Length: 178
Image (cartoon, rainbow, N blue to C red; front, side, top):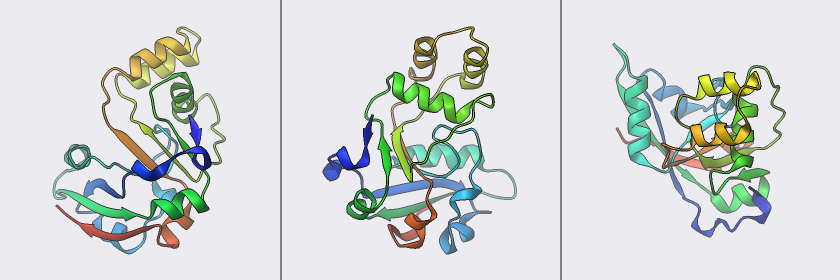
């Protein structure tokens, strides 16, 4: 786990995707609201992106329901400004720090108090709600939780928690690509 000011962002992606439905495309194109995201997700409420087009496509397909079809929005990120102007957290690997952060964000028993403007790292996977319940009730240790959520994921996500990242054009050239 690294704070954004300690991270060499030269290899950080510039292009990101958001899998959604045709119902939400227009609101994303006109005004992304980072507070509209769901609660109890990997890095907390925010606007989630991936640099992996195929992952965005899978998310869009999962969300699609009649009459709304799947859609993918592409966004360009000014990584220099993001890392210079905002406080972020980077998880390069699936380790206990990453697992604990995800547990804190997803557990309804624990109040997450993250003050990061953005978080970047691997996606948690597996039967996460059952694992959170077990950890909430002290029936497993953090290490078992880590093993359970890290066995399937092979892609990373960026969650945006500060509206300024959107408002001040850190995310730009927002367009529909599917």
